[in-house]
Image (cartoon, rainbow, N blue to C red; front, top):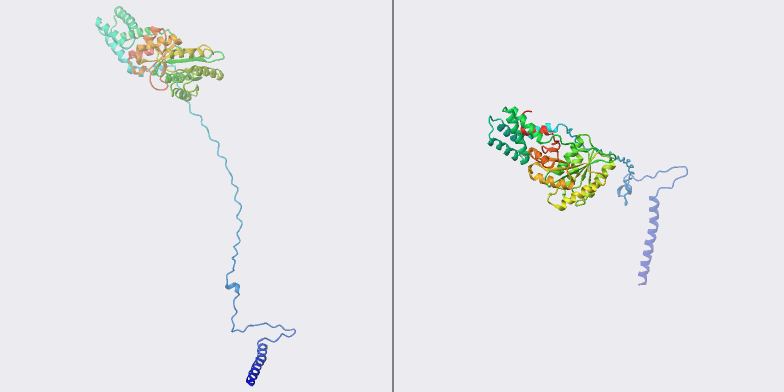
Amino acid sequence: MEYVVAAVILLVVLVVGAVGLVVPKMRRRDLPPPPTAGSTTTLERPPSVPTAPPIEDELPPLIERPAPVEAPAPPAPVVVEEPPAPVVEEPALDRPEPSAGRMVRLRARLARSQSALGRGLLAVLSRDHLEEEDWEEIEESLITADVGIEATQVIVERLRERVRILGTRTVSGVREQLVEELVAALEPGMDRSLKTAPHDGRPAVVLVVGVNGAGKTTTCGKIGRVLIADGNTVLFGAADTFRAAAADQIQTWGERVGAETVRGPEGGDPASVAFDAVKRGIDTGVDTVLIDTAGRLQNKVGLMDELGKVKRVVEKHGAVDETLLVLDATTGQNGLEQARVFTEVVDVTGVVLTKLDGTAKGGIVIAVQRKLGIPVKLVGLGEGPDDLAPFEPVAFVEALVGGDA
């Protein structure tokens, strides 16, 4: 047994020794010989072994480097152009035609609605023999035209006398006589001029009054246009503080012709507004201040007293030059009572008769003047802004009678 173990150990030692001798020789054969001095040796791999590509070319980089980012070009400077200043266009102002001759220019319009009266009178007066019934027919025509009973009696009596003495029967002759009598009844000698010339250091003051629905505010605006057409400067006072649209309405009239409007709060004291309007007129140096007052019924004592207060307050600046009463021609004889009460309260100096183009009752002009001694100074002959004309008795009667002059 011991011999066997010794033999195995010997065999292992021999095998290990043999391996130790063989391996160094193999290593020496694979390595190239060392280079000699002065020579350059290029290591070449066997041609059969392909050159492995660089690892860098086969494998992607673990961290991708971002491509260089070019710095953005600085933005161009923003030039902010200032918007051009808005062009404020002055509103085009109306330029009313001069008031001189308006009555003649509007004659045809008046004649369309009034000439029925004239034709009727001429037809009767041209008869060969005028009986009592004919004269009664003439009286009835005049009374129907609101000339008034007293004025009618005077006119008819004068016509009867002329026909009896002159015996005229031609249409042209009778027409001439009728025109003369009607013009005489209108008292052409009455002063119908509007007192609108300014005083030393203060403007003229015109107070416009009237009942509800007579077209007072519109007429006030038209009066302003008449004055401006004649070369005056005007300021409006919106003293009608009870009707919501009244101040806006009169201001619109003023803006059309370049006139200033002084107004107050709705429901405010009208006397205060009137006072401020005159004060503003003094400060700005205008020729005329037109004060529009609230419409009121002549039988309302409280409202009429308030109107009296408006006038008294305005007169702290100086006397009121004109107090114009606006009457609706269609109201007929009721207009006489209106005129009487207003005259007692504010001393009416002139009448503006409106809506004269739409009625055959133009005789109210004669009735007002004869009953109250107040001249009709302006007449409204349409709804246009310039359809208000200074009253001219001859032109009015010729339009009333119709036919050629």
